[in-house]
Structures are given as structure tokens and as C-alpha cells.
Length: 208
Image 1 (cartoon, rainbow, N blue to C red):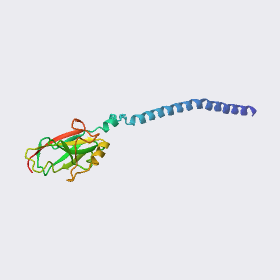
Image 2: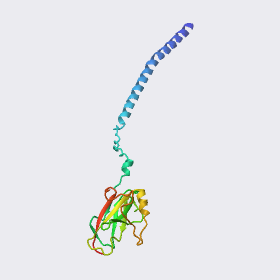
Image 3: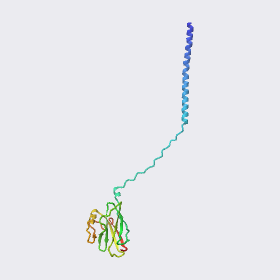
Image 4: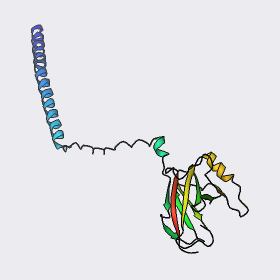
């Protein structure tokens, strides 16, 4: 009996060793198969994705640098001129003429009629002509004297003056006829030899 028990026990022991011996290779094979299947699935997924072509962003336009602001000297430079009437314009003495021109807004502009027969300057405006947006205008009328013949020439002088000259012109006392006249020009005021600060326009009498 004892021998039979040992034999049975040995057979059972041998079967157990045989099961353990096959378990390891089977597990390795299964792992390898799963790895291969995973690789194939990953390859299929990658192949099924549409390819994306990178899109380059449009280049931004090159904006040139802004020009530098004008210097103070440039921004304050403006021409003093008479733009109307033109030289030798024919006028009626009573109607006179509308004078227009350009200047800096800080300039002091005056008009005087020059009478070559007596050498006097006759003041036209009682105060400086306003300059707005670089332009000025003043209606000068009447011009000349009663009884002037047709064709008489009237030199009208536009002046750009200093503050002291402007005050001197405003301070002139009119005569009994209400006329302000003087010769020569007040001290500190430009005369007709100063071509920068005086502009002379000759008007021609074309009738009363």
C-alpha cells in the first residue's frame, strides 16, 4: 500500500512540473502577439489620419516710419504777400478795392495810401488787419481825391510792422477832415525800400 501511494504521488508531482514548464512559453507568445497587434492597430490609425499641410501666415505689410514733425522754425514760417488786387488794376475811386493777402497770424498788417503829388502817406485802417488761418483782407475805399482824373495812379502800400510801429500808427490824431496822414513814416516803421515788409500795389482810376 505504501508503495502505491508513493507512485501515485510521483505521478501527480510529475504532472505539476509539466504544467509549469509550458506556462512560461505560452505567456511570452501571447505577449508578443499582443504587442504585434498593437503595433499594427497604431499603424492603421496613423495611416487613416489625413495629412495636414502647414499653412504659412501671410507676411504683414511694411509700414514706413512717419516723417519727423516740422521744426518750430519751419512751422512758424509764412509769407507776407498781397494776393489781390493785381498791380495796375482799374478801379472806381469811390468803390475802391478789396485787398487780400497772406501773413502769419501774429503779424500786424496795415494799409496806407501814398500820394506822390504831396508825398504824404494816408492811413487806411484804424487798427491792424486781422490775420485768420494765414490770410487777411480789407476793403480800401474810397481811394484818391475828389476830381481826380481818369488814369490817375494810386500806390497802395501794405505794411507788416513791429508792435511799436503799430502802436505809433494807432496813436495818430486825425485832422479836421478826419484824415490821418504823415510823412515820413513813423519811427520804427518800414518804408517802401523794405521789400520784405512792404508790398506796393498800383491802382488806376477808371472813373468816379
